[in-house]
Amino acid sequence: MRRILPSHAKISDDAKETIQECVSEYISFITSEANERCQREQRKTITAEDVLWAMGKLGFDEYIAPLTLFLHRYREFEGDRGSIRGDPLAKRTMEMAPLVAAAYGPPFHVAPHQGILTPPMANGFVKDGVNMNSAHQPSMACFDPYGFR
Image (cartoon, rainbow, N blue to C red):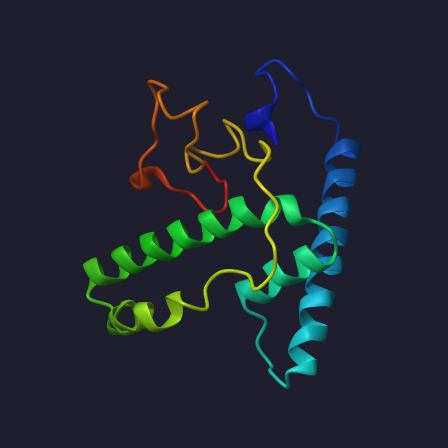
């Protein structure tokens, strides 16, 4: 939250709590829909693809393209990190990646990206005409999927 606000801005405890409640409700809303899909398909594990599907079904289409890109890059990064450590599970996942790639994208129409993730929120992952030529291009080395930076 602080990264998108000016450095001198103050955030009240009430504002922080309100945002946390909203985020929790949003996560519950999306997860519930994804879980219903898993139950219909008699699966016990909700995957990232289930979450993306639920977001599309619930009308959050504009988030799907940037999140799909982010997920793809995150998985590439995690695979690279695992292989550096010699993690056999990561190696197996990377070997299977071509088999999974065909079913990777959402099986429904994806609305065009309209600036949902813009700097600094995008952390350089969405490369378009606007930020492609910027002087600062973050690398995957500074990738922080949880925003703890």
